[in-house]
Length: 361
Image 1 (cartoon, rainbow, N blue to C red):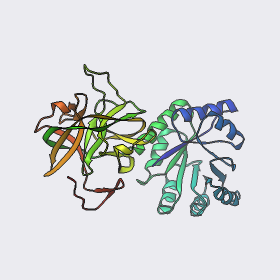
Image 2 (image 1 turned 60 degrees about the horizontal axis):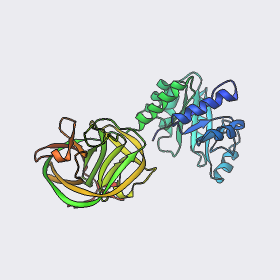
Image 3 (image 1 turned 120 degrees about the vertical axis):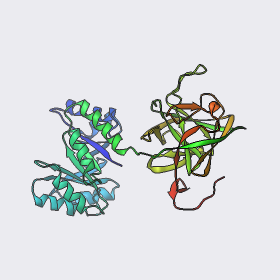
Image 4 (image 1 turned 30 degrees about the vertical axis):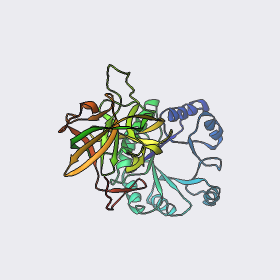
């Protein structure tokens, strides 16, 4: 996962704290600040503080300073890093060597008159090392380039922003860099029938979803159905654009990092994957999970000769996504209707994709 930090800027404390507020409001996870300002930053909110002091969350020293400081920080449970300004080849070599020390977690690289080449060299040298490479940039365009260098890119970027708009754009860039794309295809409905009542799960997120977005839900890991969010206007109830009426407690849901969870395991604060009809994804935080007894529908569909099943609440407001990319209510499903699914050749063990033969009926 790519991450980003902001470096505090401004001529006085008030201006520098404004940059901290910008970071907090844009969900930037970390801030580099002076050690004298750590307490001021903590007063503003919960954010990872990176500074040259043992009171910081990440203890960051400059090139040439005593590495024993980082050993002590590591022993006290802190993360550690070294900040290196690259002016010469010697600086580049130092950065590579110090990154291989087992008590250094981050190498933060700032270039005075370069952009790509030294980063390429360092990324190549440290490809198999357990170190997070962080690049310092002054604009979002350079941040994007750093994330993509040599395809692997840096792990993180420190932005020295000029205004609030850059911080917001930086946040959007990080979200886009971390978004996963899933391959969707169409399965053909072969059976729809009511199966009685059961405990179904409603997922209310802390995000607003749009038309064409939902979550991947299914009784089988090898084929999960795109269940549409409650963003469609209807004459019965008001829209709930933050909600997906997902299915019964036993069903799988696709989560970030290609992991699955049972719907019954979800709780407030967990992250789930919102998926669009084109397969684009983004993370959403669960605000509430509601489990209630409701009448249920069995939906069966055929995909490449395999029979897939899922169970959904029997209600007009519950929808899958049809062949034209538009939501289709479960009460309007017919044999022959095509719906979007995510096929998967992998089995699942504790939510992880594995190569194993598992029979699901």
